[in-house]
Every structure is written in structure tokens, then in C-alpha cells.
Image (tube, rainbow, N blue to C red; front, side, top):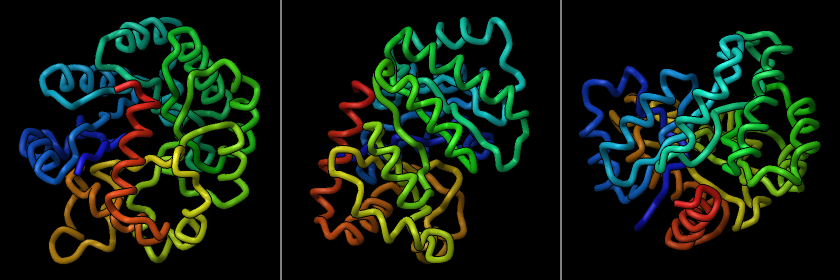
Length: 260
């Protein structure tokens, strides 16, 4: 088994004391490569440093919409420096979040468009966040789609109409343990088969979104990349594919999009 977790927040403070064990346990569980998510300048720098120390780790660098108000004149330059490092594979986590609006819609759009331009300039894919902002985010992406080198909609939790529009742009779809939640993930479970084999990616979004289908203590603990195989197994059942087939195709997709 060879899996790629395309999104794990390994620089989160909840991993600070046991990061080496978390990485080792992931490898023992068949997760050979992990993309460590950057959500602001500090976490992007931390992700870069962590990835330099360990084989099989890669990083993103970007400004999450919650932190968009921090995007100033030199942010793009600092992000570009991080993104030009050999183990940096994507621009993000970036996008729009109109649910919480920790940053204003105006500043979110400004930071998002600036990061899209950065991705175009350096020809690396986008690692996208979107919540309650589909129409605006889709319109922005539709305008630049011919120029970007690819993108994944990280932690997709939308409905069929949104899925079909993202797929029409050629975007990849990242599925997390959300699909293991019988309360919130029912709609996603119903449409998971609509994602083409060559557009499906899997991720844990650790330490968040611990799969509810885990048993015992594991269900109550923080999520880790070692749980990726469990998520893949749940998806394979819903898509009526073998576990081995799902592992093979999602790993191939991750390597193709992120050039790893």
C-alpha cells in the first residue's frame, strides 16, 4: 500500500510534542508521502522547515482566507521565496470563506487573486479552501482557469451542482474524513461516485475531522495521517472499487498534480 495524504496540518500545536511519532506511524500505516499545509506565513515557514528534515514530506505555502487581512505588499514575495524551495508543491491554503468572515470579503478576494497570480507566475497548483463562497470563488477561478497549472478543492463538502462545476474546470477534488460522518456527510456520500477516477484525491486534514467510523479510543483522539487508509477504505466501499484500486489511483493523481 502506498498512499499520499494531500493535506495535513502537521505544524499545528497539537502535534508539537509528538510530531516524529506521528510521521513514523503514518509511514507504518502505508502513508508514504504527506503534503504539509501552510495557512499563513509562519505556518508556511514551519511547514517548509519540517519538510526539509524528513523524506516523504512536502509543503504548501499560502494565506488562508481567515488570515487574508494580513496580506500586505511583501507577502507575495515572501510566499514566492518559500514556494521556490524544492519541496514546496502548491500555493495555498487559499480561497474564500464567507461563513465566518474572519477577514472581510474584500480582503479575502484581494489575497486570493494575488495568490492565484503567484501560482500562475511560478506554475504551481493551487490548494483551495472554500466555504459558503462558491459563486464568487467559481467565477474567479473560471476567469483564470486557462492559466493555472491545476488545483485541488481541499476538503470538498459541497453538493452535486458545485462538484460538477468544479470538475468542469478540470479541478481535483480532495475528500477527507467528512465522508465518514453519517450526520454531515450524507450528501457527499451520495455523490462520491460522480468524481472521475483521475480527479479524486484523499486527505486527513489532521488534526481535524477525525473519522467517526473509527472505533474505540481512535474515534475520540486527534486525527493523524495514519488514518488515511481508513478514509480510503470508506471511499472505496462507497465507490464500489477495491481498496487497492483506490489507493493506486489516488496516489497517481497526487503525484501528477503536485509533481512529486
